Length: 143
Image (cartoon, rainbow, N blue to C red; front, top):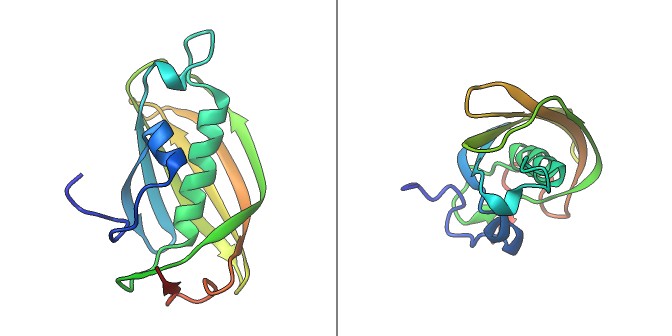
């Protein structure tokens, strides 16, 4: 990816472990992509539900924390997350599309859909998130 959507912020250790990528990020919206390999699969050779839940949680978190101000960030913590698994994938690139749906100054609600390489829905979820102190406004806080 040529554009640094994280504005110089290093990837988290968990992001490096799973190797997902933030490919789109704007106000109330985020897309993560992950190219499936063996480390993402369960014993049956399918993407593990924990990987799908992570993509749902993380795409929602990014959708809630877009900050248009260079050098500044916003953060949330997950309060509640529900997931539904509707399909399966073995290979290819999957995409998690997160959207902020509603909320106030401290608590926000988001949803996410995970699609396989053919655009078929394989998982979906919703989450409730709380802004960390300093992240309540679009201006966020210094990195």
